[in-house]
Image (tube, rainbow, N blue to C red; front, side):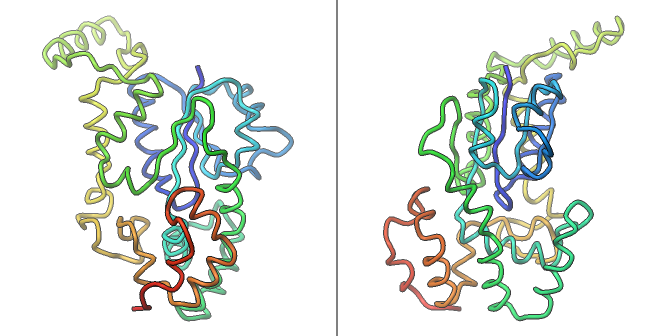
Length: 280
């Protein structure tokens, strides 16, 4: 069975992909990553999955039209408050996001460098148009696909990833006996047979260890969530940061362009947020 992760830019995709990659390594599954639809010249996502023979597919910028081309699969889809996406993307595009696989970012970064924060956020709101169209393309429910919010993942990563990998049927929830595993591993190594390559799922305890290994403090060099470094890919790790940066004009601009997106994923039920609060 094909397993899939469907994400979007600045929705924790690097963090999630690294956890998935470690789980696949432990369980002997092949994982492939497709960053965007433009990386599939002349074929659909489904055709790529069939041609590559992948077991686990990560589609980092996922429009639902391509998801529909896949064979039957189990997957999970992660979204984030689009306003936080704007702020995270602004700082990433200005300082930290690599350009070697995204040459278009070079000129856009120059534009961001030429203006102040307020103007830069306005540019970023417009620059997110394709991504937010991709997020809007998803139905309320998709068959066999678990939908999650990034905010819930970072608030409770351990139970969240247990839920994810249980859904993907990659979790071994039997009692994990360390002594038996060490003994079994020793016999396999002696026989030149890889235990990792033969196991089809990951023990719950090992999954929790993998999630812990990718904790924000470890990825950020010791900072805790909420401690900001604008030059780091792991900048702040905190939900709701848009409220620290959006001015009234950004609220209005965002609502005019993408208001329905907030309602679609339950971040706002009406337009009252546009006039609520004041800029910092």
